[in-house]
Image (cartoon, rainbow, N blue to C red):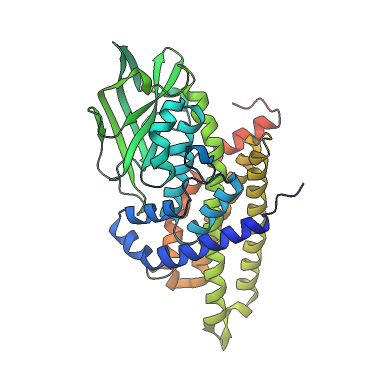
Length: 380
């Protein structure tokens, strides 16, 4: 089994790396301080073909594989996690449900702009009282004439309030014990996007709560068969866990890069701090953990690309990589010492951004649940 990137993958990764360093890196502090998503960089990533990577050319995609998507997210996340999650969510949570479960008419309407980076779509699964327990969804969809009327609330929805958000896919109960999904176009009366949320990290990522209040959508807004919404959306999360794992790798790699540079240039007690075993060994441990995280992630992407079962592989990658990223930010901040606690340091932003990686797309506890069930344990 060989899931190493090919020469073509490596060349593509280098292209994205150069883009991230030239077009994103010079602006990240400003974007973070301003707390806004720069729409212009979304369009630039679209021009590079990043939003269309894992989709076929017939719908406007780039015809690439999922490993390419992970490499792109890793390189963007290595420079800025907010822009990395914008790409990850725009592809995995925004366009993917429409591509995988939509009709040709729905695909033709929404995908061309989404895959070109001219528009973003949001994924409305989480609710105030339904996070890990997605079956506790309270949002309801009631048939009315030739359409549906939606009422409910969604929480922490990425890419939901940007100037280029074109639609939100949401889950809603359509009968007792039955959850369906719908495409709700942006601007639909009754789709109320709440003010931007104040977050610990990911400041330049667009995040809002959504309230659906007598929100009327036509019958052809149903995404997939009636009653299939929960199963469909949970399968989307399996893909998303690999993508989040790639984003975590970018975070951990950035921490290692910055820490190595600092350990070589920072002097204490007559020489660079990197000569002390306390510093050197902590960075050696981080390098080992990063290598393990990368291998788990690439294997999960390889399994998906080869059409093999990958649910447990995705959970393992997401669990290990995100916990590695959080640990990496602690290590990097410790290496930097007091300077690492200052916002001017290159690691402070990663420290703030990392924690959500263990929560979004399924918490670490949910990943352990998925893995345990894969082992045949009757855990609930």
